[in-house]
Image 1 (tube, rainbow, N blue to C red):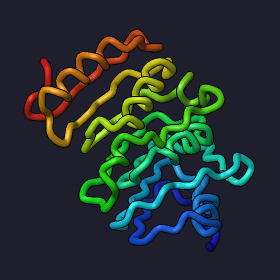
Image 2: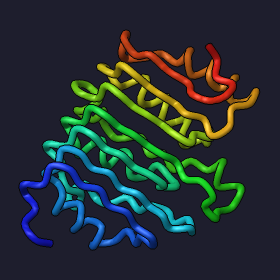
Image 3: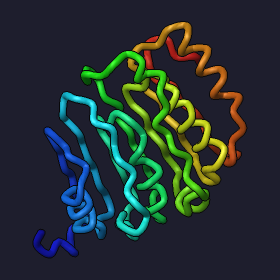
Image 4: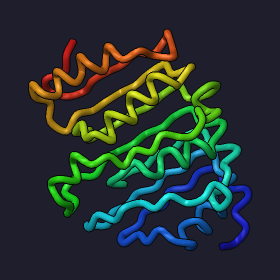
Length: 193
């Protein structure tokens, strides 16, 4: 990769992503950006590996992160731990991916060993779209609400909102929040008021 040290914003899209050294080299080359968007467009589900902390790059300037289409949440803790200035986190879940039905009940959320610096000082907004309420999503949301000390806004756009999701909304509103100023917004046809 050529010198891209002056790059401020980067957007990458993959059709058949293989999480290996090439993925890490790409990330290392983009570690100076302020805004980063990554989209996995592959049709088959591939579990995201967890890279060692020593091999994962630090993003000292990253303030906005968008992850689209990644089936599991394995990358989220790694990005949170490596982006001390992160303010905005946007996650768009997959749709139409070929995976087994039981995968909806599996959890891929791995809680960080310590609360990432961005959650204590900078992370103010989280947006989730195409949300379906998988176990890993629930664990992620609970962790974020309990630990994001300056979070101002959590927006959840449901894939389809039904009675089960309405009960989830009520539960989520009752989860203790580290930030007294955090507002939770549900978007969808049957969102609670």
